[in-house]
Length: 113
Image (cartoon, rainbow, N blue to C red; front, side, top):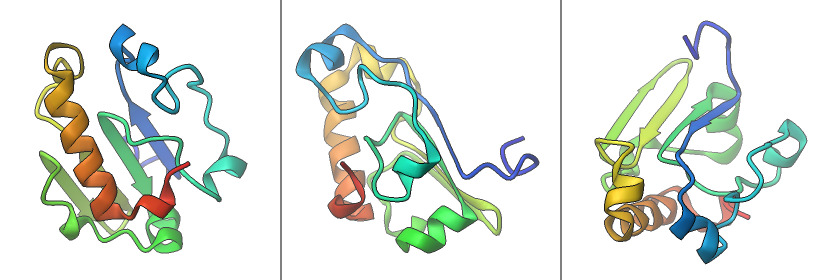
C-alpha cells in the first residue's frame, strides 16, 4: 500500500511512557512535515518506510542494516522494522532501544535530529 501511494516517509510506532519520560526525540511530537525530513529524521520508529527519493537523498543502503529485524527494499523504497513485534517497544524497551541505536549507526547518525 505504501508504494501504491508513492509515500516519501511513513512510520508506525507505539510511544510508551518509558520512552516519553526519557525524552526520546519524536516521543512527544508525532507530526512529521516533509520540509523537516529534508534535513533530518526525528528518530527511527519501530517500523519506518523511506521512499525512493529519501533513500537516494540520504544514501540509505538497506543492506547495511543487519541490526534491524526486518529489512525489505525494492525500487519504490526501503522498509525497516527494528524488532519482530511492535510489543517489544513496551515489553522489552532496553533491547528495542539498543537495536534502534545500532540501526541508526548503520544508517548514519547524521541523518537524525
